[in-house]
Length: 265
Image 1: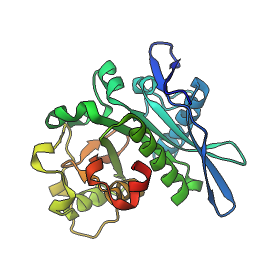
Image 2: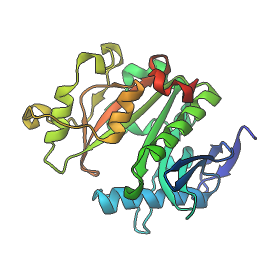
Image 3: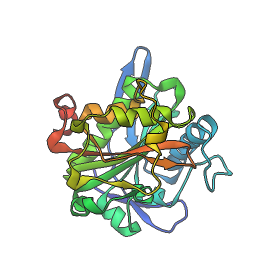
Image 4: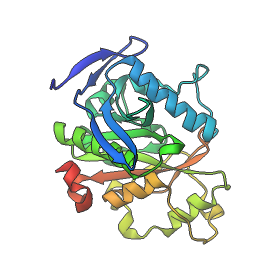
């Protein structure tokens, strides 16, 4: 297996390190899935097409440069793209993108810095991978697809010795923001990072106005982060383009839930 291979991004403006490996397979009753990293612009486009279907068509997000049915931005050319395929159809049904610290330096920032002030995490940058644009086709939102994506993240971090994972977990604002606000108010102190690691939203969700005190259920991605041992970075940001509240999540592998350790160990 080659450690790194370089390929040009879709616009030919930058180069992305690509990690090749044999696909990992997992069965869900009669459905089989395979995990791999994208190794060509065409495979990256498959992830972008799925993202468009989930974010724009299903969630109603306002996406720039998406007239051709692809969700793409400048970060795509610097990221590793994880893909989960349904084996019998070959269709991409799950995707995640990973921005390693070397690539973040080349582009000048992490994607989440458009939503949060990360100054208190500056000393962690060289050991941090950012995960983003997580999406799963609605017909396949089950345990195997999500766990395969987590296994891919784990394998990538283990292979290159990264210690921290950051990312944003989104909560829909279709209900006016009450679920997101109630979730934030429900978190105990143990679920937050310590004060020296706090991040600050650039456009904060007005939690005090929206919270009703009702019980709220965390969506699968946020729940997955918390189960893995990640901590909430602070108050949620409001993303008007995606109509979501975004929770910044930080996972230190030293605090990893033992259930997930077999992927990272």
